[in-house]
Image (tube, rainbow, N blue to C red; front, side, top):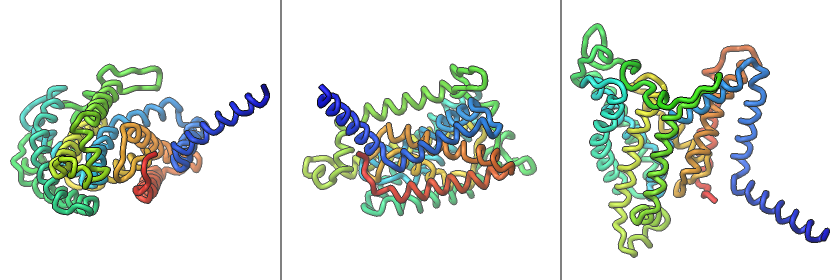
Length: 358
């Protein structure tokens, strides 16, 4: 009997060790540190439930942008450092929706509809380019993203926008750097079916919207085309021998990623409450890339679970560390700490890009 119990205990211990190894030591350390921040937070004067709310909000803002990484990773195009290409499509949808007078929830729907053709065109051009430089996608994607943002820094000034809520007041032409969207689609998802219990606020609509997109992505990856996409990412030569059009599948993944980035920036804006133009999209790819890597993805494998875990860990650390540290040292250096923590996690995540998901 005792031998049986000992054997059961060893089996249980082996299972626990296996799960911990599967989760990964780095992610385990980050998770433990984040939990420590939550434990310390009340002793620094920060309200525990307010901090939980902040983390949930930031997750709901950023999760779709992280989800945009999944199609390109599956097709072997690597991590989408060209995320600003899709973000620009989303910004065009947002600004044109406002310019044409749509308000409330309809402005959000129209922003997605208007952004979609831009995302398709940009995605096709972007995918064509990546098909021409196989093997160097992530490096070229970075330059493509920077170039598109720089080009639109000029276009935001010359495009014929006239809406007073967006245009420069002294001239009446050109768009402002930042403008609020309270009268338009600000909070349209966050306030839908919102749950509030004391200081804990759950943006149910935004979470459901992400869940819908995540479910659609999961379902797509289990279709014939999705399986072909995974095969291309695993072994393009084998996929080509099996009769799969590798270039077409890769281009489809880029278009999907670009469209998700366009939708993702609209979700981010409705929660954040502002539209930010010009240089704002420059470095938005790095937090998304880092989040999915911290979640356990690699340059050629990613899952919805990686998206969820990575976004929670990354946004939790970025949210909690400045708050707790400010309370401990009684100095207002939150922005400095946020930059240090976010860039430090980005640096760590990029060193993990070659590790495969177990």
